[in-house]
Length: 166
Image (cartoon, rainbow, N blue to C red; front, side, top):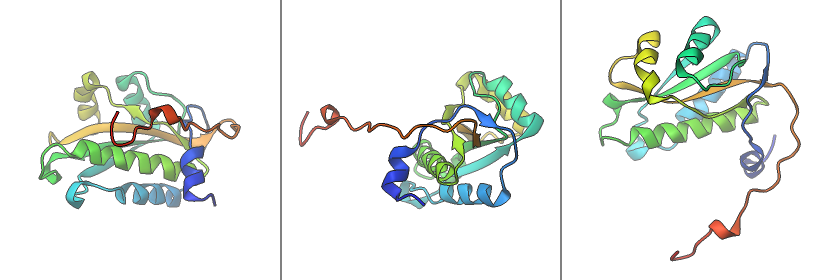
């Protein structure tokens, strides 16, 4: 298994997948990683909707520019009833989404962080029967990568680092 730092710098977005199911144990591990993300005052205001088959295909049609072909999709939602501070669910769900991507990579799977387009939310809400207090934040299609990828080059850029002032 890679070190944490190697895992962080080697993760890349995957937009093409091989057909085939993902083991339930892997899905559970990925969701456990998501649920261990940091959150404001530990509120953990997230909910996850797992999509597959026809429902996944219908979601992709509604949401538009989402890569096709993954056997699983994870919709990360903020639950306003669990967000007592008001508005931090977005940050918390983004942290959970990053943990999903890292866990996916650690499992030898591939995924990509995609948006849930605001104009699609009413139809997504209807398709998935989401309550009004549950807000779709991000969507991660997941599967086995269709191709091996070369080791990525470093993205470190000293010009983006500022110390004590701009």
